Length: 378
Image 1: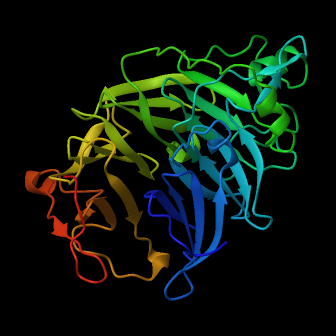
Image 2: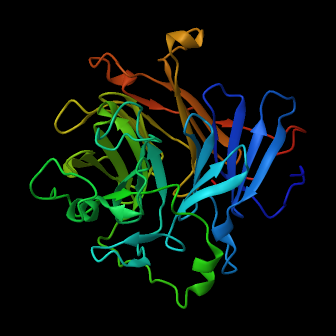
């Protein structure tokens, strides 16, 4: 690929690999970009157009892209889920309304009429079900506007629900009856070797599958799977609520009103610590060992509003070789346009000192490399 820049495109998401030698970015015109950070300035290594963005003339922005499978591949979300092989520079497999087929109880192939995916999160290693470990590629969880889905990518069967595989005798269940999941919770099995891009599937479709009807007045926006060392899944909604699910039972453990506006970002900090950032311009660290969860510390005056906040966080560890930063070893970064906040948050504050629990963020104003101002919507 060449290094030319499309002026129509804006960056919608970014992530780095573990060694921070590569930067992965998605943009608003459905492209995935891979940069080499070992070069100065960073160089563009690969550019990939996600194929399902253009088959009907529309373009879906990339909502999330992250490294997967020992950094040999990349998972991309643009309404569907796609696995991109870095070495071959090809989409290996896709799970979307446009191309996914599964075997129902009659073993007849039919379109998978699922919702469009919003975000995903990879489960921690060495966690999950033990009965599907053959050629393990891991498990992920993904959210649609209405549902939370756990997706096992380690099985070599067609796309199906776990209940369908139990009923057909392909998989075994630990219960005599299929587990009774919460209405928001689904389990899927994605055969990444058997489902992929197929022009025949796309060209043979006579009509577009209608979107699922909303199940509630709010939508799911963000997700993290590392709570409780992988035993819990937390999802944030447009109503400001956080839902905590038991991963294996598919049950809602607790739901609480965390913010007054939409939750834009969730990140597990430790087994019982969860960070949430909201369009109400606040960030809160929660103690999940309490019932209901209790606020540990918070920051207000963050820049941005709904769907405009670019958020990241980093917890400094001893092996990082970095000196502890004043105010805590957990750093929150929030950027909107040219306004940014880089603020430490305390994970274990002195609860007798209320001033250390609620802190007003100090904003800075950024500029381009040449010193010119960056436009800012907020």
